[in-house]
Amino acid sequence: MVPFGGFHMPVQYTGLTVSQSHTFTREHCSIFDVSHMVQRWFEGKGAISFLQRITPSDPAALQDNHSTLSCLLHADGSGGIVDDTIITRIKPDSFYVVTNAACRDKDNYYLDQELAKWNAEPDHEDLQVVQGQRPGWGLVALQGPGAEAVLAPLLEAGQDLKTVYFGQSFSTRLRLPGKQLGAEVLISRGGYTGEDGFEISIHPADTVPVTEALLASGGPDKVKLAGLGARDSLRLEAGMCLYGHDLDDTTTPVEAALSWIIPPSRRKPEAGFYGAEVIARQLVPKSKGGSGVTRRRVGLLVEGAPAREGAEIVDANDKTVSLGSVTSGCPSPTLGKNIAMGYIKDGFHKAGTQVAVLVRGRPRAAVVAKMPFVPSKYWKPT
Image (cartoon, rainbow, N blue to C red):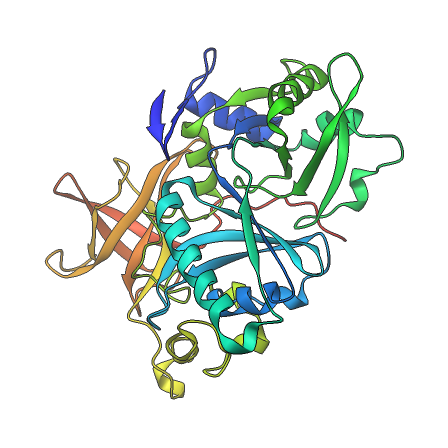
């Protein structure tokens, strides 16, 4: 057990090493207790416009029960990321927003300040927004190719998971041990591993029974509990960021290779979100009249010893020339290679570029690689 985000969290569970748990998830499915994440609600006639101010996304374009990856942006116009987040539109003026536990205090302060400012503005009298959290609620991630087969038997009659695609959600009640239906849960198709899977928001009284029902549904050969260790290596193979490591207050979405979260309609200086002018200029390379960026998040394949956070990336031909640094790294159980991600000087970011990484002071050959390192297997329409 280790302290994480104000909770004591398991790195692994008895019976499997971290690597074995990782592989089991890729081949079958695992249950991750992610109840430490902060589950928030924003409601009111101004909810869409408020979220359009503090994120680069366009929640107005989301259909009900659809979600998007996004980020909260600093109000100073720098384009820096306060936190990354998932935004789900539940109803026209109601949004479910999940943020990181490690950023809880910072996010609470930021959102309280921004919401107070929004509601106090004279022209927002009819656009008031209220926010709430779900303290004590469970959040369980069922991840892996067998996730659908494990979850399906617990659903109410008539519900078909085949029609629920990646980035979609629905509310239902699950059959608990004893076959009684529990309280309503919110099930979202997606996750943090690159595999097919579901994240289930659960009433506090039902979190343990729902977890037990999932374990019983699959049995020990098809579903197991997994901890932070496997979660980290799985998300790294999937090329996903961890805030405080791969993202921070100084990072912009463009630098972080997250430009794809900004829809075309919002890629202009007058888009109205915090940092829009900076981000719009960064989206355009210098050669085409924009500012571009000086660094970019990339994937790396590293020879020899694995590169960890803080390892320096240097020129392959001149080890005295610094190009950037590693932000996350580990051996990949799936690939049998050492993988990492980090920020590298613009111009060295293209896949196939040979560089070196200083691991405990010793240069190790590395090559810039495309992410995800392992192909994603999300359930999407064909």
